[in-house]
Amino acid sequence: MGKKQEIKFKKERRPFIFIVCEGRNKTEKTYFTHFKDRNAPFVLHIIDCEDTDIISMAKKANNLFAEKQLDSTLGDKVFCLVDLDLDRCKFEKYLHARERYKKVMIIPSNPCFETWLMFYFTKNPKVVSSSQKAKVEMKKFIADYTESTDVIRVAKLGMSNHVAAINNAEIKNEKYSDDILLIDKNPYTEMATLIMELVSYRKDE
Image 1 (spheres, one colour):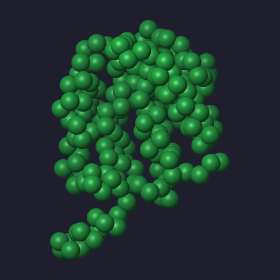
Image 2 (tube, rainbow, N blue to C red):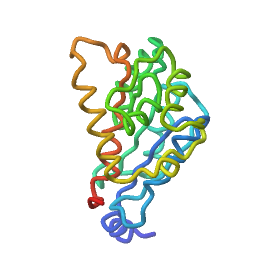
Image 3 (cartoon, rainbow, N blue to C red):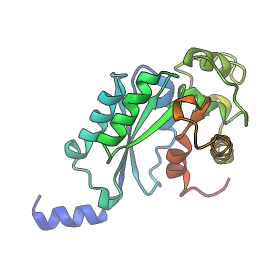
């Protein structure tokens, strides 16, 4: 491809959004597959990462800019989803990764991704003592929930549900004092930032 053709291609193509998530938790990949839409103003890619180490995940996400020739000036974005698991060591790694890989939007959930899912069903998810307990809590909303459950399909979630979950999570986050460290916020998630990006173009149902 010549230089002029490459410049034209870049101007005409839709922005790319990459989401890097833990490969062992199939719920995340299945969940985000529902946001792939040929009518979207972006092209969505979901990347499995077998690593669960936060710094390694953030590095993998950061490397995508070079590997996929991404350009932030064209609207390309890379998100990296991390579970803090109420673990202060993981929290320190999250802070380090956020400082080191500034092009990557690192989205933390404490303790885990299921924290976000619960906001679809309740305004006040319970405080839990571990990520495993959060998964158990999910069974109150989806009886046979596992880490491979297609939550959007099973619960028949639509645009109005996404909006409700975003509002529930943001209201909960605002209730925490600014003096409280993120790792001490339980439950806590910044997933609303990403979901707003993915649904902002959709019309109300």
